[in-house]
Amino acid sequence: MIALHSQDYKKVTLGLGLGSFLVFCNLYYFQPLLPYFMVKFNASELQVNWLFSSTTLAIALSLLPWAILSEVIGRRPIMRCSLILIPFINLLMFISSDLHTLILLRALLGIVLAGFIAVAVAYMAEEFAPPALLIAVGGYISANTLGGIIGRIYGGVMTDAIGLQWTTLAMSILSGMALLIIFPLILKQRHFIAQPGRLRTHGKQILRHIKTPTLILAMLIGGLNFAVFINVFSVMGFKLSAAPISLPASLLSLMFLCYLSGTLSARLSGRWMHSHSLFSGILLGISISVLGLIIMSVQTIIAIMIGLLVLSAGAFFIHALAYSHIGRSATQGKSTATALYLVIYYSGGSVGGFILIYCWQVGGWWAVLTATSIIHTLMVGLVLALQWVSRNPHIDVTDKLVSCQ
Image (cartoon, rainbow, N blue to C red; front, side):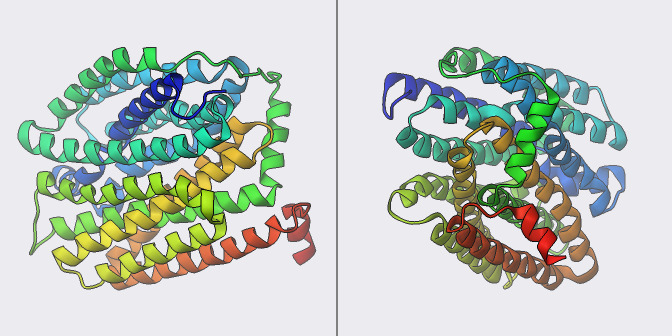
């Protein structure tokens, strides 16, 4: 097993971090452009939201197939395939000009990105010693946040400077060049054991994960967390781009620097688990997130920026704790377990976008705040349920649901 602070640890974590950075740059560089697309295509907020939600929804639908395939052929070939295809999708977007084609290509990009996302943590869970895994997952998620930050700033600044098409072409070139650095760093797996290539086998693994309460409850917490976090940023993008503030895409993208607090909190999550419990950590993250939303209610630019900083810290703290919990707790089929977590995670982000943006359209910020308050209340209930079932590890979720009917 790869030990913490060893040379292999440094090499692999750098490779996975750079790969993650590249994946999340490509995932998110369209998000600050949603107000730009409203003007360009004369479309509504809900219509242009498909440019972002189609990608996250495609990721959610593609994660398990990639994870199942990786149980047969290994994690590294899947990650390589995913990274190689990214530049080609960007080239297709470079030659596309209408909204519906871009939505389809963004969905195709989501399928491609899902390959890396589905198996990276499973690779770490199999190759890293337990103390190294805790720190490595926090670092991996920090790379996610940095990729998201830089990708969004890149999208906003470059589109204002050279236009959308040349921005996508430049992203294609940069993504191709990055592969030359990333591929040598991700070492061949030494502890991977191929699973039988039967769909029924993997279907049973997925069903086992769903019926394991300590896993499924953490997955639901992660999905609800992402539903709030990612889409509050989109809502604030619509607000800050509209009159009287009317920020251009280049300045609007700078609000995603608020993710930096999430980069820090994700790295602190591993250290939290050395001294404290998962449950108290998630409840702390929820409290921080709620505080951020309350601060945003002042609705000035300064209050919004401070609120987004606080929200990011809480949301990524929750995500890092829940995500690493899945990697540690799944005794079999780690790739399908982490992929199932991400299916729920990205599904939450996609569905949450339509809910919160609809609330924004019909009721403004106070409707959004009401919706997020309901979601956070549900999350607290799930944390308490997770704490209870952790003390009763033989409880079957499906049996409990049947008994309640």
